[in-house]
Amino acid sequence: MDHVSNPQHAEAHTSLTSRRLAKGYSLDDLAIATGLTVEEITSTEEGRGLANHVGRIEGVLK
Image (spheres, helix red, strand yellow):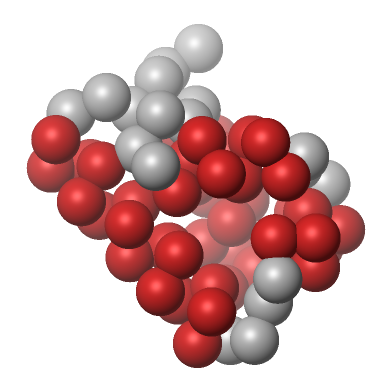
């Protein structure tokens, strides 16, 4: 499993939070849409998530 821990990646994932909020998604809404848990989304937004979680989140936030 590829974890995201690079500081550049962490900064990029912070934008996931901004994009989620701009689209009007709560953490619960995004969890339902992606099939991820709130904890997995939070970790990903904080730059500690799995690479495939990023793809799932980005797919919903397009």
